[in-house]
Length: 446
Image (cartoon, rainbow, N blue to C red; front, side, top):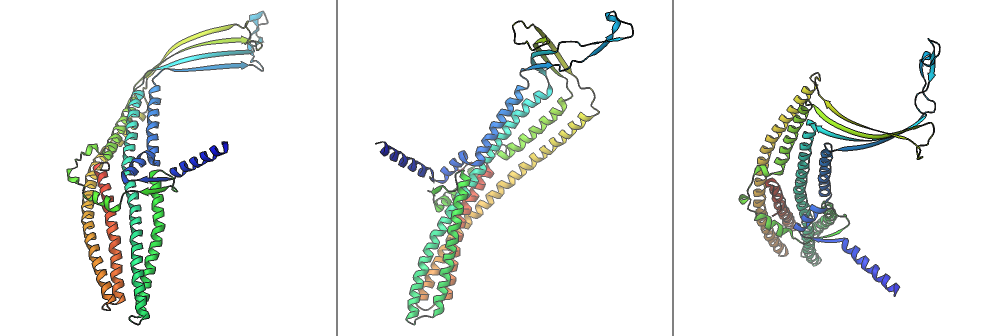
């Protein structure tokens, strides 16, 4: 019975492991998965956690700080002081050697420090908040990049898979023509050159198929890395290239609103400007006085021997309260130079913000133009593919009837194969340009 349970458990574990090594995803599922599990998304979330911890670290500077110290001293040879001998009834002008204090002493002190006012601390709190916002903006920027990367990687896999299917069909078609031509050659109805030409075409397609199969494996591995899973995972894609291209080509970007201040790149540039404003305030705050206070309380014990653990040991307590005021007076214009540098950096940040606004508008217009071009190119490629199909079929008929040569058939086939790849690439370009346009509009996948 125990052996049976062990075998059953092993089989279940094996099934779980195999399930974990396979994954089936649509494009939207792939994007959702990558937003949670991709390496860049994980680290972007960690950056936010770091920013939160740093914000709290900065906050604690203005909160009470308690520290404790324990000091133990054992004079191996006590320090000797010289005092006039007449103090002890000795000869005037002579000195007596005296060792002050006990050979061993121990003290323990606890100190509470409290910052009362410091301009740098106030600016630091504001900076920590801005730093957190920058980290959150970075996460949003990362998510947009992840979306586009997943779309491109997903599309490349679909393109490779579609290419494999087309090449396999082309091989079947050419092999059929080759067999028919070979029979015609055996019966003396065609020349050997026609057979050889078809063999060349077939060998070229098979070589292209072999290369495409290898590239497809790499495309899957690239997709897995983008998703944040092991490259050996068996990934299955449920969407089709044609369906995604059709959906992307129906995108009505004119109906999409665009507020430049909501764009993540603008937010990042704006926060950079805000950060530089705080740097100016920080340099200016260094001219303000700072005020802090402290309270400490301690015990001290003394003796010639280490008797501090005995009940008879006498302990002496002490306490102290103090206030420290630090007033900057003159820095030889060092603070002024630092403030001027910070102001120049602020001016640069403002200029970069203006440039970012212009670039965002340009990128949007460029993305719209590229998207429209790819939509038109997709339609043109579709028409060209249909035309190339008709031409190739006509050449097949002509060739069988002896009207057309093998070279004319091969040329028609090469044209067909080229149009097939152009059409696949056109579909992928529409999908990719849609993703680029989404980024330019600061929109997620629709």
